[in-house]
Length: 210
View 1 (tube, helix red, strand yellow):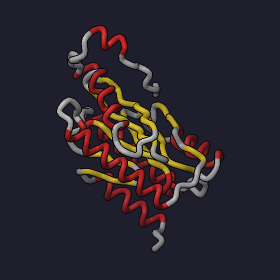
View 2 (cartoon, helix red, strand yellow):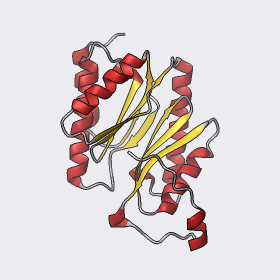
View 3 (cartoon, helix red, strand yellow):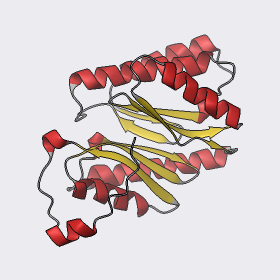
View 4 (spheres, one colour):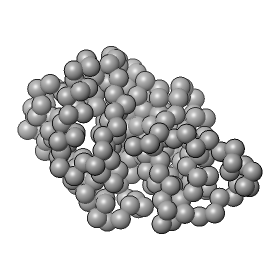
């Protein structure tokens, strides 16, 4: 059954107005107990709503293949596109959306079969469950998206140790080919890392900046 753009817009509004766990494509998110401020969270939901609606209305972008993650006004696009032109259009629309501070694209020009989509969704779910079950990681503050077995992590961590541990947990899931972490360390809730000073010096701080 094909859905009209109007139906998709209504569905999108319903999804974004609710709370709880959301699973869309290869992404898993929890819309409760977020470490962001109330104002940041409201702004991010608003930007996500506006941007996703713009993709649905666009004739040049296939919204169903693009995952939109907004964190403190920073947009991360993951998923697949049919062409480089579609990717550039998706980026252009994102940059023109009010409230967007920056845009980071991890979109790839690739075809993703139904089986691959299911595998990515399974990986995202397994990663999220492990993050939620780990005592040293606050999984509710972290968001997971997976494309072609590449896991993208966003959200807030209270320390470098927590951020790096989340990435290690994600990489331990069967089927994961790579982990790309956009997790930020929140300076307002920073806690001393249980790692020693020497271990901290050896800690890989190569997370991509966005």
